[in-house]
Length: 266
Image (cartoon, rainbow, N blue to C red; front, side, top):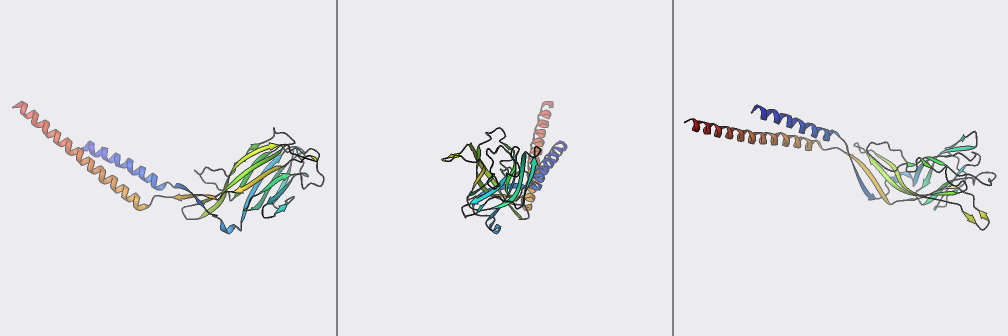
């Protein structure tokens, strides 16, 4: 009986600790639905871009933005910075800007330069391209910076680069009900040297985007306290019931064995 009681206590302790761990842990549930989650954004999406062009002077580098609402901005400079690289022969462009929630593109090019170079070298490294608020949440794996680390230094220096992006709205809701809005994206790319009837077209790095109607939502959830208490009660009651059955079986077998031994002696 003592051995059965000790085994039951150890078993109950193990189950209790397992349930307690599950109760304390936060579960992240994801779902998909069709909607615009961030209706208070004014139809805008914040963009953060960090790209290095090691063989193009900073005086030649510029950012242009176009979309289907008629926006056409050449040489965007607000909230942007150019850092010289390779003793001034290269440039790192860092910028934060907003785009409308309609199909469009933004591109890094020499279009805003005073004088166009004959053979601009558009080889590059993309350090960061992200949309919306930055999410730093453990256990959420997503393509929030899918182009981060893209290296095109070995590409044709005279080639244009097209990155076709499908932007997916993403919502993260914590246990307190606070929501944060961000965007993931998928990407396909191609590299080409473009020509027209007048000759070779000046290359650029294009980011062509469209928005997905599907929203991904991540929600933090924790097991309700009443369910935790119910499970603990079930563990205790079930363990004692099984222990009683085992003890009864052992007692019955012990009594039967004693009777057999007494019968042999008589």
